[in-house]
Amino acid sequence: MNTSKYPWWLSEVVYQIYPRSFQDSNGDGIGDLPGIISRLDYLKDLGVTMLWLSPCFLSPMADNGYDISDYRAIAPEFGSMEDMDRLIAEAGKRSIKIMLDLVVNHSSDEHIWFQRALKDPEGPWGDYYIFRKTDRPLANWRSIFGGNVWEKAGDYYYYHTFHRKQPDLNWDNEKLREEVISIVRWWLDKGVSGFRVDAITFLKKEDFSRNYPPDGADGLANVGAFGQDVEGIGGYLTELKREAFDYKPCLTVAEAFGVKDENVAHYVGEDGYFDIIFDFKAADLDYAGEWYHRTSWTVKDWEDKIMHDQLRTQNYGWCANFIENHDQPRAASKYLKEYADRPEAVKTLGAMYFFLRGVPFIYQGQELGMVNFKRDHIGQFDDLSSIDVFQRGLAEGRSAEEMTGVLNLRSRDHGRTPYPWDKSRYGGFSDHKPWLEMTEEYPAINLKDQIQDPDSIYSFYKELICFRQKGKWKDCLRYGSIERYTSDNAGDSRGAGMDQVISYVRKYGDVKLYCWFNFSNRPVTVRLPCDVAAENEAELAEISWHTQDKVDIAGDVLCLRPWQSVVLRAGI
Ligand code: NOJ
Image 1 (spheres, rainbow, N blue to C red):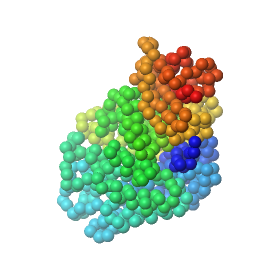
Image 2: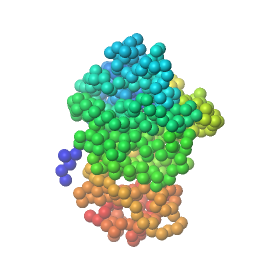
Image 3: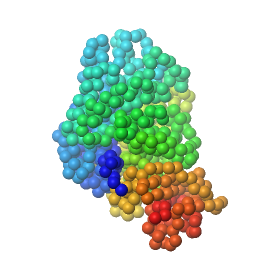
Image 4: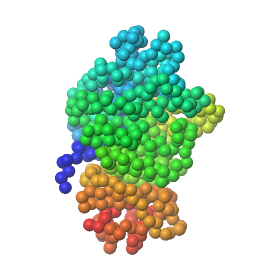
């Protein structure tokens, strides 16, 4: 079939790098751009085609770079602009593209714009931000990192969705929007090929005078619950796409919490503001509103959330598929819980999301099956959000021990520990004590061991990428539709039921792939759909892809082994 009508970026496999934690090259315990350059051959060999770098711009690092004080400069701890130019060029030589993080809902309070604004909130720079002359906060909204969204500055208050060191930019101001457009074009001219767009659903603000019912002991209400995808946001985003993203070919992926189902069509698709968006309902299924309000989710709840996003998006465009990022705990720990150290379980987790419809993203260390750390006290955490949640938990009457336990499940630091290249002291990440403690597991989970082992999780990810990029069903995996699919249990009462299995169907032209992923420690017997029949082993080998050494089919019954993934192609 002619695949040229599809967007080029459906052939990308994106790898996210948290520059601070990937590779240190100058012995200061902080990862940097030359460190990334030194690992490009590794990334090329893994098979990824695009690198998304979390912010590496000038920043006081209150939120590790998501607080930018100059959008056209590199933070000295990460290197120089020459290093960035070299990274773009060296990656390009290996056919790897670079995607940057565009953080324009807010800047740092140390940005020159904000410094000028503070001096004259009523003046032109003041209008780059959101200032109000008032003697108290306008409403009871809690910022994402705690405290009221309104912060006092002299006779004024200014608005921040996140930390007080991250004042929100005023998108109603045309001059500010022009600045952002020119920043995007500047980076596109430098040769970057994409943007991950931070916190974008917060651009348009809800009516500031409206109070919401408090949801915590502080009397505040989480702005995340009502302050996203607010009516009117489309005007800004349409302009941003037209004037900035359409300037040169690039892939745009928006961090888009809280997009209402009826608005998905505006966000993705041919005329969408973005190419693809991250949806977080599956990623955040383990808590309700607050990290310390844990849920007891089931495999079916998880599947429902995944499929909800897949199906609502398929009508208009494509998903951005991920199981980890720098704000999330390690996927193996979150989804597999006590089975996180079982390689076959980690492999099935990888395959399940990799074969979904859309562009796959891999977060650094995910390809090794990294797991969460276990820390003893709050002093061992760096993430400002973890520290805020800890304190709010205490204020709600929870013990320090309980809250440390919550952070051991949920802290954003889990994804930020230095990359374990080998089992030497500091894991080959640095020869200096790293800015954040390594995980305790790195002697057991490190690249050097896994790269030599054909059965390792690393080797599996490499094969998975190769299968999606070059395998016999690559067109179906890239361009095919997706449907929910629930098989009948074939009645073995000793096994687990279909409620432990995530399954779906991908279809493209005459290729139809049934995909099953057993998320249980017990076998599951499944009645095969009538269009799948393998008369003999040779035929089965021809139509199947699977983890573990073989697929067990007898007659019309497929027996999924514990933690096994099986893909079968329907009747040829
Ligand atoms: C989302 C980013 O992923 C997160 O790391 C950051 O703290 C907030 N946006 C604020 O920029």
